[in-house]
Image 1 (cartoon, one colour):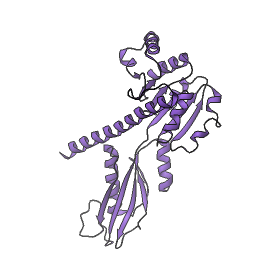
Image 2 (image 1 turned 90 degrees about the horizontal axis):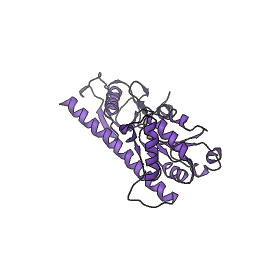
Image 3 (image 1 turned 90 degrees about the vertical axis):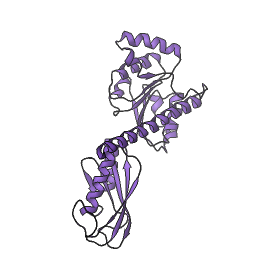
Image 4 (image 1 turned 120 degrees about the vertical axis):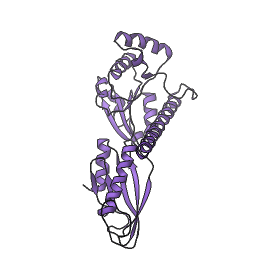
Length: 282
């Protein structure tokens, strides 16, 4: 498998990786500038030249994977018998600079209910590099003709028509952020109940008023959910400082809140990685 297919496979499998590229070559080197390889936690594809050069790049890439590093970095190595080496000598006589670019697992969002607000929200989120699941029990709301506004999406869009949309909760990947905004409060309640029974999900957001949530609290407690479980559901959704009841404004508010959460999650991973690295090196 070459590096292009490897990147695609990692994306499909929702596995993190690192793309390693030879950016500069001075003198003699085993590969020219532009050569690439992909490194995952347990395997690698293609080559940037083998030997100490490649082994060092692979080791550093796996450090980035282990610590959750998300910032690209460069690595310059001398291919001389006098240069420091951890993985054997390379005596080509040149110098190579590598660029290591983390390929993180992108966020996943599932919108349950592709009505006025859901479609507006999908249009905004589709401009981000995410996995976007659109779910509706009404076939006409997820027909291709209605979703043509998403044809130039950056996101990977997965469309689900299901008369029992709760089933889709078991099909979305771990960590998926769920937004419940269907046309039917009974459907919303069933989705909330099932979402609370799914340990693999990320955040759970419910559109609606405080009066709606009070009714849902009673129902969900009756179904056996305790206070800790109910606290997993955020309602109302969106940024409180962005007010307005029209679909476009609500969509902007919800999207802004989600993007803020994405950034915080990346920052949290990097912070934990920095701490872990410091502990290892101390």
